[in-house]
Image 1 (cartoon, rainbow, N blue to C red):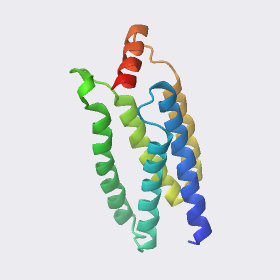
Image 2 (cartoon, rainbow, N blue to C red):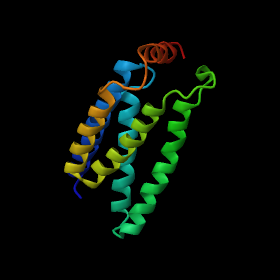
Image 3 (cartoon, one colour):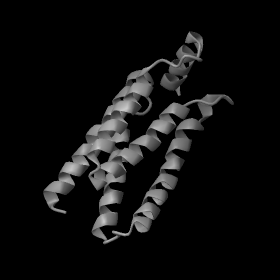
Length: 149
């Protein structure tokens, strides 16, 4: 893989995951494009390193992906579990979006262009539609807590 291909894949990871971050920051403002972009870069670098180290074996690449996703789970847990939650579940959608961003970054590192495009489109659609089961008051309370927390 050439240096230009590496840069293109890193750029794709940043763009794809930053879009998710922009949507999250538009609604809640406590995590945004920079954080999601960094998560995407991390995923892409992990995939590229696996390939450059000669881990052409799909089982070896799978282990790299598993390790990355286990690590990203801690970041997602930090979004969900915080002092302002007051024994309520808050931030699960953002934690899920973090997980998706890591996988999209990994896909970018592998050069899986259709997977990245489809993943970003469907993730953005899901993040942008209103939650039908949450009342308007619950959504407003979640926004206020996210801004103050």
